[in-house]
Length: 313
Image (tube, rainbow, N blue to C red; front, side, top):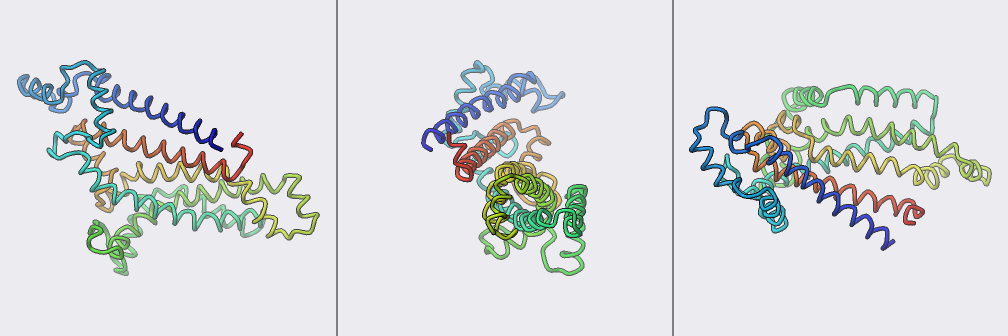
């Protein structure tokens, strides 16, 4: 197991190195002059030159890359050009919104998808299977921002059970903060639950057709016991893959939902930084999100080895 973890850790480090090179080159080298882009076409040459000195663009690309990487390793992401605030402080203020939102939405998706997928697989071809697959198709087809607006109309405006947007902060209490995150989490969880339920059903049906499942049934195991004790664990590899991808998407790709509900999360920070051409913030936050995705993938790989010991070799 130690060798497996070591190999995965080395792969993680190599991935992060390549990703940092790609992010740095894409934002600071390939487009041309970042200072001219940030200030716009009508900027005075003196202003562009001053910003170039401030950003250190007169130095070599290698020197700037090494300074950027070592700064991130120390927790220093630089200063936002637009807000004149340390980027690590901006990220810290927003990750306490995006991370709980992603975990909340993923938990809701799993709680809905697992019973639905198990029910559909155990009732293959029946009315329950048809109903579950029909609902999952709707869940995939419905845009989450449109579903979010329906949730606001029903639960915030008509019933007045939940707030329609904004985030009061965790200092207002866990209950108030979770109430503010509930509608966004439900809107994000719907398509993820639909996808996960379909993947789980497909994986279970593949496993249920294996010889060892027929042997387990021949030894006297009930269909439910065979499903829970043998089929589910052996079907978890593709399910874990989807869960890892979904968490990464929910953490980094909730830009539309965060804008619909006016949530001060990482996705909205990236959107605002792109709109204001603050490349310093975009570069650092994108690299942070890449790091989060790679770490989640690493944890999913470890979960593979726990579920299927054969993968450790």
